[in-house]
Every structure is written in structure tokens, then in C-alpha cells.
Length: 347
Image 1 (cartoon, rainbow, N blue to C red):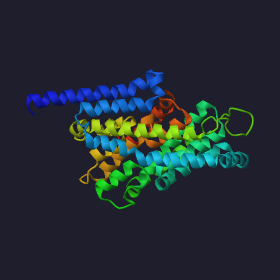
Image 2 (image 1 turned 180 degrees about the vertical axis):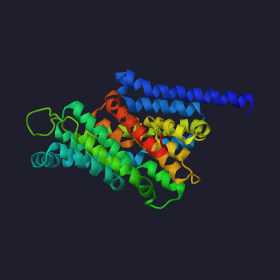
Image 3 (image 1 turned 90 degrees about the vertical axis):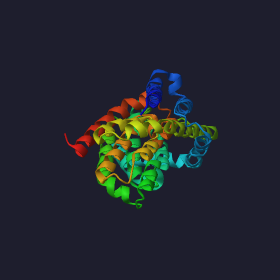
Image 4 (image 1 turned 90 degrees about the horizontal axis):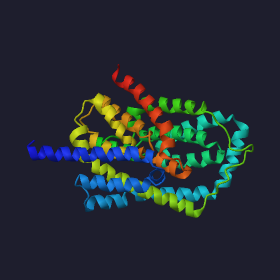
């Protein structure tokens, strides 16, 4: 590499590192940014794409079109859940009377985690927030359960190509069959989903009131539309952010030693893990390499709000801030990453 190329690469790396630091820190420091995270990430995405020189018409077209299917799914599901909200509330009340609530929480986390590979992570997360909001837990307890459940949904959705974009991209790049990821990751992720169900069940569960009534906050058509619009801006911003970081990832991250790459992939807590999958996954990788890369991306995606689609949907619907999410998500992800690192690589 000549001196000009070295300088350009250094500038590109410094710009990417600065933007990544801002994305990580500012939502934790500013309430205004925390509760307008979608717009903030969109602006950071534009800056990242511009700094790396990829802010061109094809990327802009992708940023405009890529969020459409997800946004439509959120909009349609939101309208359906609004229509059936009373029935959902009644079903939750009956469950409270029939089963211990801790058992209900464990079943909810495990079932949604496993079904997310079939019904998609989007639908699973929408079901989660409607059921959880009908239970009227105290804010702190509700947040913990939602973060744990979204981690389970994110893991389970990777078992088939229809569950989430990461799985779709990985299967396509590997030219693998429908059940490849299930065979590769299932024996490793299904026990984690079961463990998350147990962990969710042992959390404190306190109610806001003395009755078994549902929440006082009523869903409105305006609220459904606003949530869909926020998801659109969020996904568009992540698309730009991922594309902006892709040149740096290809140049500096992909060649790393697998053990170091495992921990570097924690950046998927704030970046689109589908983009990192597209950059890192290769048919030349063996099963062990693929497994370690994908597990690191999936677990890290549950740590912070921007890390995965279920997090985005749940935090938007339940108004969970970045700091609230991080209090549960970051320690949970770090413990899981450490456990899997030992299982995958040894001491």
C-alpha cells in the first residue's frame, strides 16, 4: 500500500471509529437522542455512508426500499392486534388464573423463541409486546422480560432463512439448503433459548395494580402508524450505517483471527448484523468458523436496541429507552458471549 492509500485507509478507519463511538455513547448520554433514536441513527447512517464514499444512488434506493416489507408487516400486524386487543387481554387474564405467572413467562419466551424461525422475528416480537403489555407488570420488570425474550427471538429466528435477514443472507451466500442453519446452530442455540426461558421465569414480577385488568394505555390508529413510520426510519438508518461500515469491515475486520473476530463482532449490537454477515460469511469457511461468527453476531444483536429487529419493535412499542435496554441487554449478552467463547474455542 502506498502512502496515499495508507493515509486514506487511516482516515476512513478514524471516521468509522468516531461514528461508531457516537452511536454507542450519545443515546446513553442524551434523553433527547435516546427517545429519537430512529432519526439519530438515520443521520449517523448518512454520515457513515458519506465518509466511506458509498452514498450513491444504488444505496439510497436500497435505503428507501429495504424497510418497506418490515414496515408493512409492522403496520398490518399492529392493526390486527388493535382489533383483537380485548381478546388478548382476556386470554392473559385466564392464563394468570390457570398457571403461575412465572410458568407463563417461561413458556412465552421459549415458544416465541422457537417459533420465530417459522413466523419470523417480526411477528414473534409483535406478539411478545402485545402479550407483555397486557400483563401490566411494573416498568422495570417488564423491560427485563422483554429484553430476555427478544434475545431468545433473535437466536431462534436464525434457524431458518425466513426467520430474519441474517439467516436469509447467510443461507444465500453459502448456497445452502433450507435446514442448513438449523443443523449448524440448532444444537447450540435451542439450549440457550430454553435457558433464557428459565432465566425470564426467575425474574421479579410485580404488577402495577392490584387487579388482573389489562393496561390502561389504549392503542390508537395514529400510534400504529407512528410505530410503523419509526420502524421505517430505523431500518433505513441501519441500512445506511451498515453500508457505510462495510468497506472498513472488509478491510480491517474480516482478516482477523477467529477468536478476535468473535469479540469484534460485538459491534453488531449497534450495526445491522445482516450487513456484517454479508461481509464476513464465505463458502470457504468450515462449520466451526461459520458457527462462531454467526453466534457472536446473534448474541451481540440482543445487547442494545439497534442490534436486532425484535429490539427495535419492542422498544418502540413499549417506549423502552437505550439505557433501560442496556442495563439488562449488555450484561446478558456478555455472559452469553463468554460462555459460548469457552464452548467454541476452549480456555
